[in-house]
Length: 235
Ligand SMILES: C[S@@+](CC[C@H](N)C(=O)[O-])C[C@H]1O[C@@H](n2cnc3c(N)ncnc32)[C@H](O)[C@@H]1O
Image (cartoon, rainbow, N blue to C red):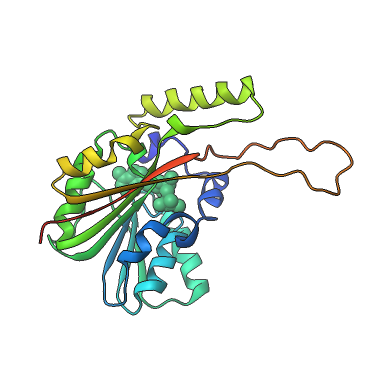
């Protein structure tokens, strides 16, 4: 997959949607593994709002957010500048070919990236390489097998099927969540721990509305179920 065949695209709409995320909303499973003194790589950081939460947690240690799309890095740099955080930097890099020396980072994090990769194990091996011995990785990706739609909507079901086909054609997998444990083991990680959570994309009708509220659709498909995993590189 190249930036050109990345399924959600990098439009302003798609990016603004990602930028609503925070460490608290989407990376809480990794918080127990973060502490001051740890260097962290966030791979596929997008607009970097989760990365910034990580930087706050491990300050003053360095955090680096990388993404293969330059426009994401520009946006992440702009958001970071407005927060005046001194320990975070962003740069372009491809998850398959990181330029860092082996054993550079105490922690590696990657949120909502594996589902876009045609060879997630190859990327995870690269993460394993740049992680220090005994370091911990945190990965979270969707598994659309858990989608719950209410009320039933033929249009929405069609849209989800179409997106699933498109993602597969681009080499990705909307059901990668269930495979994360196997992928991490194949990439050489030990002590793999898995957890899952639901995300609610529903909008609630306002109590003051006199006419029935229309269900609004998220601008970018958002996973309703995500599988989170942490794993350790052997000490
Ligand atoms: C769904 S977004 C997630 C962004 C951020 N991690 C978040 O959860 O808000 C996926 C990001 O991964 C990036 N990406 C996809 N494939 C990549 C690769 N091979 N190397 C680096 N970044 C990649 C995309 O450009 C995009 O910004």
